[in-house]
Amino acid sequence: MPGVSSVSQVIGLSPDAFIVIINNFTPGSGLLKSSVYTKFINPLTGTYRLTLCIVEDSLHSAQKNNNPAVGTTPTIYNYNFMGVLRGAINGTWGKF
Image (cartoon, rainbow, N blue to C red; front, side):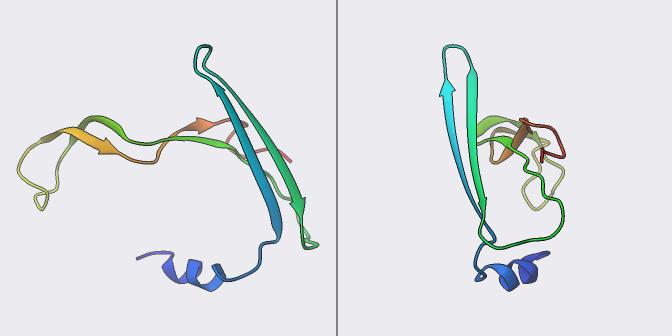
């Protein structure tokens, strides 16, 4: 599995920054307000940017199937999509 060894090397390290994200969504207007609070715990060099992304879960729709291990059906109806990236709130590369 790609990346597993990289994650296992850093998973036990103390964080370099403290980040709190508070989201407020108003269903009637579709307005999303995100407030982000950050504080660096350790002195770091370099430039850092923060990107906020909207991810949606549990979407049910048709999914094309071309994997014979899953079955011969060309389309899987009512497929459960998880972790669908909908977009970046503040751009692809984030903000300083």
